[in-house]
Picture (cartoon, rainbow, N blue to C red):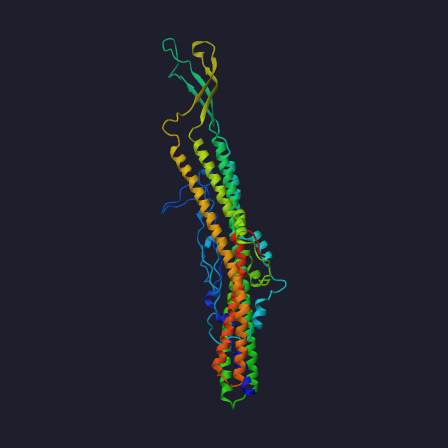
Length: 534
């Protein structure tokens, strides 16, 4: 009986670490994030670029309304995203497309015999991190102040102010001076002409259709829409921070689990070698096998450490940390946040319609499209040019008489017969309808994202409850029963290893479910455009 219990202890220690049960290549790929891009302002009347056509950067005053042009080039490139770990829900964010929530996390296949007890694993998943570590709130505050992408896009708002100034500038008046009746030689009674005339003309353009005011309205609305777009970029960057922070927490848990497994196996290997029972061939086999498993666990620990460093780099990019600061970055906060339940689906949808900045930008874009239509209608009429000649001098010296002076006034305007800006007006009218349809489509997508996020929140929450209340206790009870049967000699070692492996798979699924639920909580914040979950 004692020898059977000793072999049981050996088997219980032959468990690979957590990192060995996961795809190492996927765990090393921390999502670094996409480049934020404001994109074209909703309601703009400019056509999209044709295939193969370059999209040069132009200011609003020049007729372009594409603030996504940074440095003269549109930033639409994306860095490769990491592979999705099993059991982790996909985000229902518009920039990543609409995806259905995943099913309940199923037990994952293990590479070897796993740990026989969940006590260490459960305590690790609840580990809050060092007291002086970086909290999520502190990370948000740091990103808003130091993120280079956000700071760079803020200049778009300054440029929008410049566009408003440009749109409100008046057309400069024209000054014209001339001399007429200049003789070849001189005038006389035999060659009468002249007298020579000197003119000073001032021409003042008059905006009778109020085009300047319409341009200013369009520029102001463009800035308001741009501000809403900037808020939406910030919302998406906060979502990137959520994912990077949770990835760092999950990578830290993986590393802690791997370290704990290595420590247990090292301790057990020392104990077996101290006994040095060479008379029993099974003892030598157990030592060799445990040494082999220990090497695998150490390799898995290296993989987990590398994944943790990758997650640090991903968060460090968002927070604009130096290399030294990134190397010492530690997250603080538990993955199992205890929070009240979110509002119902109807209220969540109402919050999204009210708070999401991309929806607000789309609605402002409809108003901007209407202002563009008013501007094109004002452009039907060209400026009227008021001509004023304050003084005209006629030189009478050639005839020995006194010079005469006079003044003149006139008006020049175009007859709107052929060109009444019909094409641009038709385009602007079509753009109003298009902007309304795009706003309606965006509202539908936003509501779909809210439903997906709310569904994923409920399913991930139910998954944790199902594992903790039904699956995990049953797996633990099965292992205890198998241990007793093995000690009594009723089953062989393979049967006991199967029970250990089943329990390890369940505990791994439990950790995945906790991480999945934490992601679902934060993705719900992104979907509604308001931080409901801490």
